[in-house]
Length: 83
Image 1: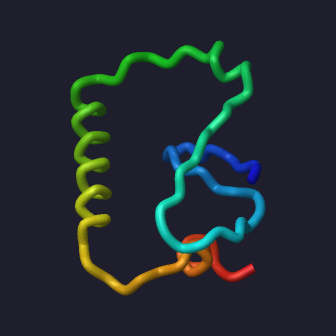
Image 2: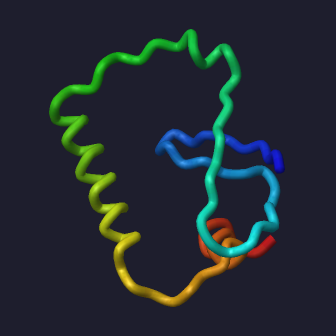
């Protein structure tokens, strides 16, 4: 399956179309245009690096919480609203 999307400034990926996949683990391969390889970014400051790591740890903690089973379609509806 191939689906195109956009990489947003906060690092999330938003698909341009809905994908129909069964609930469960999904693995994604991301390919970026060659031009992106040419963009150099400045190294992160220690403060920014710590802030990002704290945000990642927070998200990891969320995935460990118990909750109702949610299908991929429900997940997309929660994030993007019903189409």
